Image 1: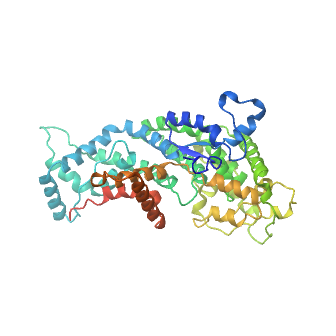
Image 2: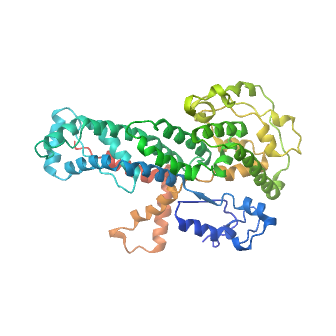
Image 3: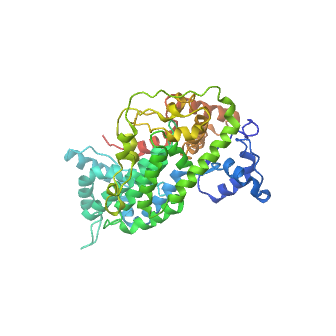
Length: 469
């Protein structure tokens, strides 16, 4: 298909889930899809040491593992251990939903107690986010639901209650614990903003989250398996995440150095060598872009040295001294690690003004002051578009790296859309008609910017729209 559309030399990265078949497939496709930078990569059995650097640079980002699938694996480690608790809530919901008379009785009870009556949706074991939504919509009705269960759920003489205060207390804690993972999944599956620069932030947030719950009485037994799974996939930080973080002008190498120290303290890992290697690999990749796109540089402009915050004004945020770390290596996500939560003026890139035209764009960019517009309105891709005359080659490289999706959720939902088109009443549609209907549906979703959350919205609605009034 890529050959039919003339796209075999336009592929920069492919994001897939963690199935071993995908790893094998990408190993086979690697020589075919690695020509974007103009480098012919031989099959694994024909590789030679002389071209090893070219080979690695050309395929550095070729196969990316879906971050949301990794989050799913991490969360499943917890839910497997918490299965008895979750099953208790499932049993209670199933008991209520299995009888129309019980639903009517529960509705009458809620109305009598001035509570808006509703049913509750069971989760799907294969989708952990549905477990989160099940708990989310159940807990606001804890009091009427518990009272009704105590009165109607059958139990022998002296038998235990189905739902106790301890069940609710631990369940609430599980719900709050899952919230970060749910938010991360939603954020990282977006399609209308770059997701690769967000990954380092969420690696830190998740590491802090796991460490904070490490001593919790009810959850500490599930934390270590989750940490093991986290370390399996993310202790060795994928270079795509690091490059994307560095190419955010609010971070650069100084922010990257700080974030590595933070991650190192949280995961008991030394990243000193990794930091040096990342800078070296970033230079290698830039040099290949320079070879291919260097001709686009007609006249390199330098930004004016306008007044603004000096570099020293941000030293207390970006510099990591001993007093910056709290006991046990647990840090609040402030300063560099929580950029979008703070607002300030934009710091100008004054270092570029003193460099000559022979200076590497990458060196000039990294030596410039970091941008200090740290609010939610900062548009990363727009910043690179506005600075494409200053960094004509580097801006192309930044666009390629920043736009690599870290999740396959949005693309998978496109395929799932076909199941809503081919149904009982439409089983004889021709392939061309299915293609047209799928495209039209996707274009309509694009106009309303709803492409990335169709399934999430439907899942939310399945749990939300169950009121009985």
